[in-house]
Image 1 (cartoon, one colour):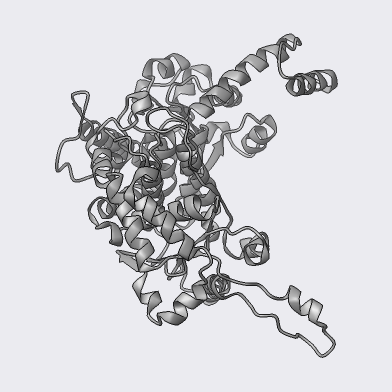
Image 2: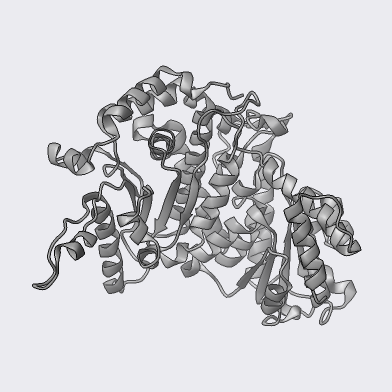
Length: 540
């Protein structure tokens, strides 16, 4: 169980507050001038990962206080509770065991309510392996006796974002199956996808823990109707797969028990891609690569669980985030991967981090007096440079940036990769050092020179990874999962519920009834005005 410890009452927080008064006007350029080996001092090397965090507004003294903060909020004990099945999701009385999904060791049982979860997870993995292999090899056939050519994954939130990010990220490892994702209740998009497919060779995954998620069920109904144009009613089950905790609901929907895969209460949606929710991943890249994804995450799990805090990549990243969020007042962070395949990665992190740590009550249910949660955003590599890096360099807001790059490309043709990585290193250096005002030509006046100046002193982390593979992508995602957890522990919040999301769904259902009945009930004047305008002007 997590203890309720107000971080602002710790000795470390007091030291950090006093230390910040000395640091708030510090220039990182001066820190590098004073310590020629600074770049060698503030980095962590683990497996295929190198984190350089020297371009941050910290000194060794800063780091010592941040590490002390981790000790004082009992971070080590919290990490053990995460890995051993403690019910750290107290508001929902659940364990949090996404780490168990990628544990192949079976070294020690993890007991939850009298059940060794490692055994049921291994059983599910074996079923996934057999099913995926049969589909990919063309032994599990469609109702027409043909191999499947396309997979449609219907889900929302964690049942969509994580798998979609990984499938896109591992494009170079994909097989012949084409995978498509449907999440939003947007008929225009839905039919744009379906119109390109053949119902007779399409496999449909319906992913919903409750099997009542409105958006998912609505989309599933439309897709099943579409399947029926080429597949007889009695044969539909051959094209349907369920991923759910509610097996009987899936059976009642028409899915064969043998193609229903489990979800568990101890796995939150935004941490579920490692489970049966990742069936679309396994179908896209094959089971062997899916297993490498899990094993890469497990490597990062072990690093997180065993490495001393000062040598622990997720812990250090989280401590830096707290330093900026709670002392400097930097409320946003950007994540910029220099790989086009990771264009969905920032969106996945948005859900993971903002849904987890967007909380305003502490573990005692009391209103917080300090900031939690960070706004996460980003875009891929050079595209981001031509979009929002102008604000990073010369804007009035300071945005700490995580740069993610890969030492080796997938292809042997590395000319473009050299250019890509030159931009990668150049941007981190530019944010650090800035640029002095200089005359660009004989005729240029001083005023224009001023516009060419930018101060630098903008913080960033540089994460260099050997190569984008299933294993390293798994480790990268796990790194940010653990960073998110550490932030939540320090902020004394519960990171694994999402009541804000649930309330919005309740309101939507009420408003839906009003729209159907064409009868707007009591709302604030703005919402009432908008609903009446919508009802008056819609053409359907």
